[in-house]
Length: 228
Ligand code: ADP
Ligand code: MG
Image 1 (cartoon, helix red, strand yellow):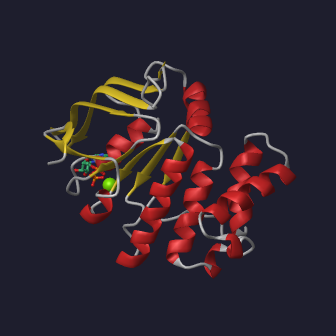
Image 2: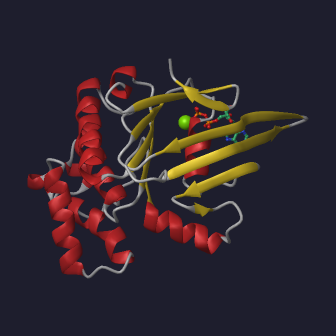
């Protein structure tokens, strides 16, 4: 491991106004995820998992506290710089794959690399290699609608890591899959983290799958604590 977390959130606060009252969702949440480490975030619905991931991924601003991506403190950065860090250093996987329906699997994975400045031939070669590593070598030219749910989600994972981010954030990535497919997708994720050395923070309800990750945390009273 390197001597610095890929993600460190420190004392993060987030509250939502609900009519006259205020919902305090995160109240000083602190968490580090190290390079090469996979952490499962397990907590009941409504406790703030998605909120935490959105803040860690610089998609939302915390009301207090700080988010470090590597050694960069991000809370005070201009939006343009936050967007750059998000694009270059963070990959996202959601419950629904959000693949572009008109494009093939390999093209969906190529796009973020080409937006990142890579030439078409190199992007295709790298995407094919990554999809093959994830067991989709025979599905490169399929469109999303021609793939199974688990295959779609593995393409979404490939797209999320296509630019070799330092951090992968996944919000219930297997919530929409049957148990066997979910198991396969999780195995794929674990294999990828091991092979690539990026850090992964994955919200899930599935304890068995969380057991495959290096560490498990939960949200209690707005703070991040180890999951017992
Ligand atoms: P989880 O992902 O653990 O199910 P969320 O982070 O989505 O939880 O939401 C945590 C709580 O914050 C929920 O009670 C939700 O209703 C509330 N919440 C989330 N986003 C907003 C918002 N934009 N405005 C008001 N309340 C919100
Ligand atoms: Mg959620």
